[in-house]
Amino acid sequence: MIRMSTLSEEKLLELEDAWWEKEDETDLGWINEGEAIFRNLSRVNPKEIRYKETLAYLLIKQGEDLKLRKHSYEKAIVRFSQVVKIVPENARAYYRLGFLYFYKKHWAKSIDSFQHSLNCHPRQSRNQLEKEQEMKAHYYLVKATQSILNESLERIKQIPTKDLELFGEMKHLLKEMKESGRAEEKPYQMIVNGVEFSEISEREYDKLSDPFENKQYLILNQRSMNDVTLSLNGREISIPATQVPLLEYLMRHPEGVRNEDIIQRRYRQSRDPHATLRRNIARLRNRLEPLAPLNSFIETIDGGYRWTSFYPYRMFKHNRDVSTDLLLD
Image 1 (tube, rainbow, N blue to C red):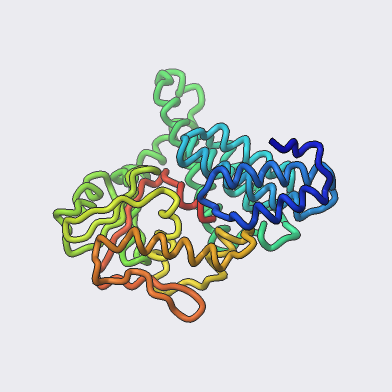
Image 2: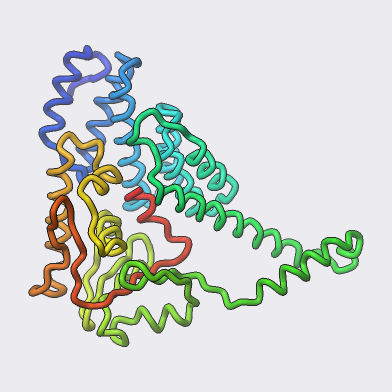
């Protein structure tokens, strides 16, 4: 077995060439091998930014695997934290950390990470946030702040009334908040035909997401990170976690998406990003084919792809499910 720590930069670059020839971003072995190569390249030539950025990309891929397949959130956080140490002005890495902390209910750390992502000014465009990602960062900042508020209110409920009398402003504030918070809790998101967004209650979710009660609809239901299904006319198929982000992105943009948009979000570090994208589209098409053999859900258009369902469709997930935002953004 080769000890990479003893190799020169020239020899490591030879290993890199051989490694790229085997490119498969779904193969954890390939990812781990690359991580070792670029960690050593960064060691022998710490001034080369390409080595650091590729290492950061591979650490992100390891973090995704830890989160999705192994549920090792803390180890995933370690990987993403290493990324921001290697490339401090990496807005996307902070953005992903924000989602991880959000999922772990570490609200203050989530807020801090999202704020860092919005305040970064990366030199490389690949490390910058898109406008849509900036909006998501603001959204989850508010949601995390809202969660802190709700937890504070629960603690205040345990305070004896006579103690609240010591500070009259507190009683007045609580009264105002109770009056404004009487609406039914709506913990689920529903998106109809990719564009009509609403938050719905548990009762509404159970009714509207039932594949047998809603056979006229194509339904993407993200019950949890590793339990995602697509159903049509009572028939249901499972969608692997690694394919969900690409599927959701296509369904959320029925007007069509450009190849470059997907590549910048997901495959920008690949040596041949267009081939990587085509390979993943082909895998997704094969996955969807049994659901409706005569219907091609993903149409190739000039410069990109478009979702082409003949059926109206609904997409569901819990407000705290941020897995696809983490993976595709």
